[in-house]
Amino acid sequence: MIDPDAFAALLCDWCLEVQPSQQVLVLSTTLAEPLLLALHRAILNREAWPLLRISPSTLAEQFHAHARDLHLDGYAPIELAELEATDAWLRVDAPGNTRALSGVDAAQITRRARAVAPLQQVRLSRRWCGTIWPTPALAQQAGMAQADYTRLIRSALFLDRPDPAEAWRQLSAWQAELIDRLSQAAEIRIEADGTDLRLRVDGRRWINSDGRRNMPSGEVFTGPREDSATGTVRFTVPSNHRGVQVEDVELRFQSGQVVSARAARGDDHLQAALAMDAGSGRLGELGIGSNQAIQRPTGSTLLDEKMAGTVHLALGRSYAETGGVNQSALHWDLICDLRQGGRLSADGEVIDLPARLS
Image (cartoon, rainbow, N blue to C red; front, side, top):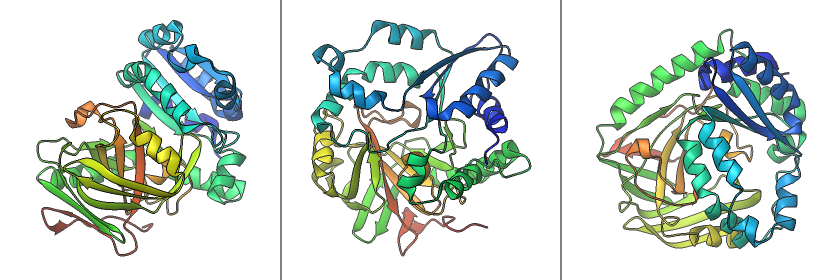
């Protein structure tokens, strides 16, 4: 079991650093009730304002079934006003059905994503964190029993350690050393079955993702130079993107731009995402996973992109703190597993990545 009060304390103190009088927005579904109640208590105890926005797990599916042009091409002004007044926000992923949007036209999903892009920009300008609460749907998606999946989440959060925050500090220190090495590199090469891709990262900043913004985390990332991606990459880890299952994605790049793309499953969704806007066919992120507690794909990008021994590439929007400048309503992380004969090199030198539990 996961102790919701210990989890809430980690989120408030390590991730969000909640301060007195702050307004903290919390978004999730009713399925995360134990954690949400613990967060409500924890935020109040830190003399801040908890603003809980809790919805039924079927709300997104209903929205796309009944939305009119007004809703697909815009947003309620009060949503923007609330975000602008918020000091920090937390999203807790707790779905009742991980395939809820699989029957929705991909063009409609991308249309909605373009419309709410201004809201996302404001969200990213605030202190924020995304996390997860184990639900039966997530366990089923991972192909695991509920108890086993919950133990995986607890371990990935480091809540099975005597001092979770100290464990995150230790991982942060290890990742800082990796960043010191990567910051000297001009070119990154990714090689695996079906993959040989080169990216330039000179002049870009590597970020230490140590649980402050994603929980669990365990990655370092940067924004590759937008015109540099050259070669082919195959993503063998399935992706559940906006409720749509996409599998075995292959992309070919020339001068930073996707020039051909296919997916064995969910190809319509992939093609619609790539056509979303001018920046959706370029890379906005290169990330390297380092969380050794996550040993297998689960279908949740939040977890899977942190697997030690993997890299992920995001189509679309860059994170400004990396120096990346690609603009897009899309940010879609796709994961390449290097644990079976793959390798990552920086200026020709192979980078040793943790891939097994110590």
